[in-house]
Structures are given as structure tokens and as C-alpha cells.
Length: 133
Image (tube, rainbow, N blue to C red):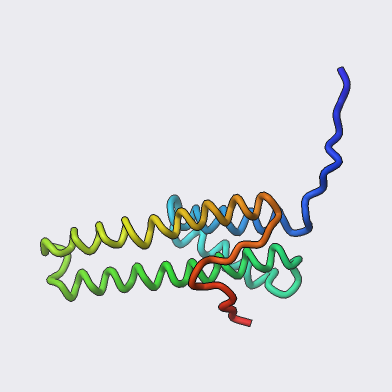
């Protein structure tokens, strides 16, 4: 048997960018909070030293996670304002939140993961060039 070598090289920072996008999705779908803490650790550790591709994905996922968390707090405040968790309005707010906000964040996270794996930058709509730096 002969071995074939793959001469294609991935752009610098692809692995870190892919990890950031994976943690973003895991934060939304599997382990909220734990994956955000890991993502925040990676962001603060590599925000100045990572290659441009990884820095872009780290920053975008970190900001999107914060915005997603803020929107979740707003949804909970709306539930409380509309009568608490025993109210019929609770289901309306939850269904609207999950069908609009949460599913949009998951879809954008999947697109971002595909872009990271391809070695290209991705900017979330509405976040765009928003930066903490």
C-alpha cells in the first residue's frame, strides 16, 4: 500500500478558530456556562497573540455569547413581567425566544464553524466589527 500525503496546509489559527466556534455551539446546546467559561479563558489568553483568523473567531464567538446571554436574561425578565413562570404568557415568550433568538444563534454558529474549518474569517451579522479592544 502506498501512503498519500496531503500537501494542503491549513491557515494559521484554524484549530483555535474551530475550537472557539465549537465551544460557542456547545455553550448553546450542551453545557451552557461551562463552555462559556472555557471560551472566555481562550479569548482572554489569546486575544492579543493569536493569528488573525483565530482572533476573529474568538472575538466574534465571545461577543455573540455575551449578547446571547443578555437576550436570555431579557427573555426571563419578560416572563417575570408578564406574570411569572406560572402564567400562560411564559410559553409564548419561551417559544418566541427559542424559535427566533436561540435557533438563529445556533444556525450562525454552524456557519461560523464551517468558515473556521475552511480557514476563513466569519463575522456575525449585527455584531460585525464590534470589538472589546
